Amino acid sequence: MKETFNVAVIYGSAREDRFCDTVGNWVVRTLKTDSDISVDVLDPAVLNLPAAHVGAEHQGVRDLHVTLAEADAFIVVTPEYNHSFTGELKLLIDAAKAQWKRKPLAFVSYGGMAGGLRAVEQLRLVFAELHVVTMRDVVSFANAWGRFDDASGVPVDDGTDAALGHMVTDLKWWAGALRDARYPQATPKLREVG
Image 1 (cartoon, rainbow, N blue to C red):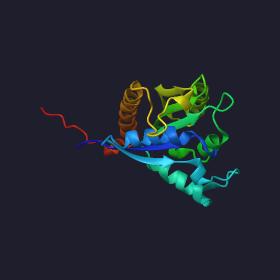
Image 2: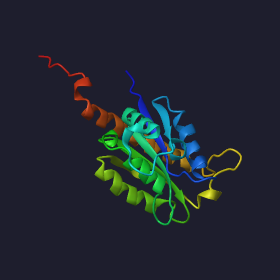
Image 3: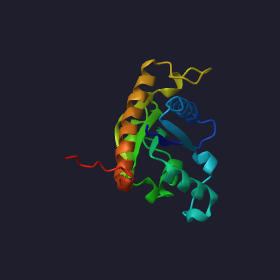
């Protein structure tokens, strides 16, 4: 039986006219071509999470918890604002706890000269506290606004699809390994012959 993985793609910005839609939509379209993956999108602009932590009574928090709990893996599409990640992304991360635990996460970042990598490094520290395994490889777009075709929303660099494919291959491996570890009773035991 072929394994399939539910990947939650998390948009890291909620600003109006955000470039996150261009980068995030490319990631989602690319993932949907992989028959091993089903995709859910978590968008802080749509969830409209409350600024105060009110728990799952809020519909956005409830929806967030369900999507995170059902996910086998995550991809965060993050910009870099002022050498860090956004407040909306931190609010989304902090609105859940157990739903993140023992799952893999990959990053697609974008920004100016650093390509969002300073945001990624800070996010690694945050996700380590939540027992999330972050992938080493990152797909990063320095000076991102000139790196995508305006008409198609696709990166103009041919190597980018391969970089995302490599990262997703590792993400799926980790998703399978960690899912088996989280649910060991679901893994069939081999009988000794002999």
